[in-house]
Image (tube, rainbow, N blue to C red; front, side, top):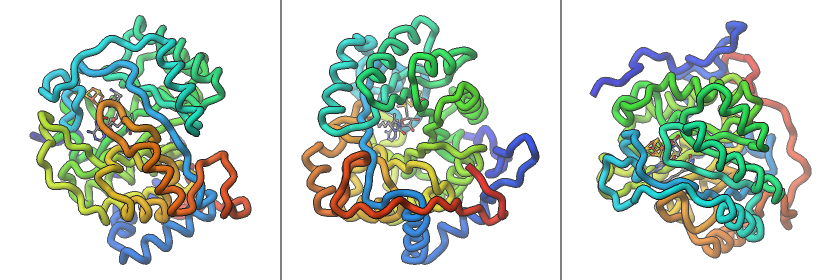
Length: 354
Ligand code: SAM
Ligand code: DTB
Ligand code: SF4
């Protein structure tokens, strides 16, 4: 299968003022190639300069509309065309979503993300989602939604209802994208991100690793993200969750240390972003997660389920946090350090980003 945008530069996202890209592909590849200890030391230094290094944001995810999706994302158990055992369900009632959000807040989450298995919402789909956003916001939680591609006016309506973040991932590098999805183009994703940004919403945008991509393609994904202008406030790094029935089932898993490197490079190139250790934490194990937190991951999905697949049990995460001396963001921890310094590290091109 031919990649859709083989020639798209890794530094495609420039500001209208012809700003130089913050991070060239070569510079990002250079970070990946550093000795592991040097990379982690540098990433941790950037992390500690911009964030409280022992605080981790807890975000709970809920699938508000599961399965039956018309798209062909090769990793996704919710695509109707793959036989994964996920059935096409109706959108959840608003009251049920509010109850799950209240329980997530009681368990310590500060952000609540609602996901729908849509190519994009039809206008009639958006109405109940707006009601959900209002209810979740009223609980005092940060709100996030991931509903697919947005049309004119939809991002504005979400913002007006009280949405804080919109999650829309680039998923991978442009050069590898055509191997993974054919039913929407990379530029469609960039357009939705632009709509989200223009509506004044915060951008949550990241990708998936472990899909059989090369290191250069992982670097290409990070370069795309880091050169968005401004770069996303929230960057989920997903480790592919392999689901039987999807085309990517059986792919050689990523070397876990390479996953840590990806987190470290995301931290260095997007210093102020929340870098989220997203799907696939169960497969990583405690030691690798600990390295990811050291390398700059400071957000997780918290709760026993992601959208359709499993996530570490809440009790397991609490125990891991206790062993590592981590605490939930917004709750004082015993080892809290003074406020981080907030000097932004410029990219190798010397220009400031974000
Ligand atoms: N349907 C909407 C869309 O695709 O934009 C929103 C929901 S979709 C499930 C959100 C993101 O979840 C995808 O972009 C992908 O990055 C991630 N995702 C889906 N299935 C995954 C899997 N098996 N492993 C890791 N990440 C996955
Ligand atoms: C993101 O980057 N990861 C989340 C969230 N955004 C919506 C989704 C992970 C889904 C994992 C597979 C599943 O549970 O269906
Ligand atoms: Fe549909 Fe989103 Fe899954 Fe793609 S990732 S198949 S768009 S639910």
